[in-house]
Length: 226
Ligand code: SF4
Image 1 (cartoon, helix red, strand yellow):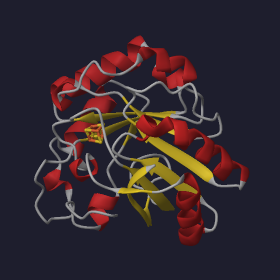
Image 2 (spheres, rainbow, N blue to C red):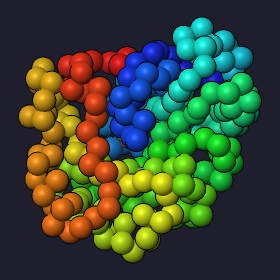
Image 3 (cartoon, rainbow, N blue to C red):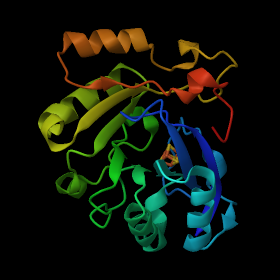
């Protein structure tokens, strides 16, 4: 496998936000979202066997929560799926952050999938694979990262058209972060003001979670490996 980093931090972007978590960040992505905060994963990293990844996960965490992220982890699904099956058998709770563009039917059912639907301002709108919708369960969460009103309206209409509130365990609307954030650990780095997003959600009576990237309020937003 090609791995950018394995580290221990606080989960930041789902209903698991705030919990200690071991992150396995896989190298490479086939998308290029304009606000991507992990471009350093597009190349480089180091080769590790799935057994070496498992050993490092065990060394850092000895049980608990593990998240596979990237880049796009499902580009390495041939090695990733058996690794996830082994970690599940050892009692880990697994999260998989994925762009929604790759097929997800081979992901073990016990994994909590956090699946993006890319919005227009990401530059990758239209990449969500609608054939992934039947693979969603109540364990899973669908996430929209929003840079402004156009993205919000896209997300709102998509949620309603596909009845996402019933297909997945949760729907998250999250403000995008500025491409080059300042050092402030506050909402001034959000491309969309969270207060405005909250008002829109309440006005439209959406049953969704307003997601803030918790780690960017704990550490400086540009910090890597957190
Ligand atoms: S899918 Fe994720 S890793 Fe890939 S470009 Fe978009 S934000 Fe970056």
